Image 1 (cartoon, one colour):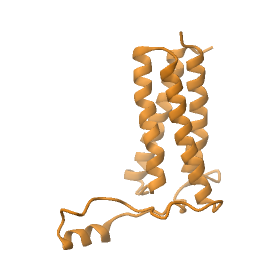
Image 2 (cartoon, rainbow, N blue to C red; image 1 turned 180 degrees about the horizontal axis):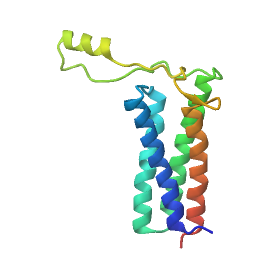
Image 3 (cartoon, helix red, strand yellow; image 1 turned 180 degrees about the vertical axis):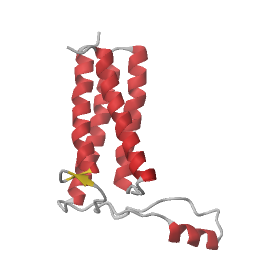
Length: 155
């Protein structure tokens, strides 16, 4: 039976691995993220921070917060999967965002023309018939279960 520390390391490390994988695909495979992809990253960032705090502090509350973060990114991943498979409509604004208020019109036009925009309903990569969003949803559910197991082993 795994102890609390190992479970926290597995859950937070899993989120860190997912983030690193997403960044690898973005920067080394030239697969730009859409808005929903970015939304899925933030709870993983939170889970990593929660994991670090849980290792230092202890208690049940932080592992439960980690489980909540994992469930949040999993929910966004499931929603994104539904958008990709045309089960429901996604956000109307899956575009890149950068403030152009302090740019000249020529600079703003150049930025817009060279900006990598990814639609939320396009699948750029899949494995075994599942997109990155689908894999994120499945992995995040597993991470949530690991976080809950860590909370149960907390004093």
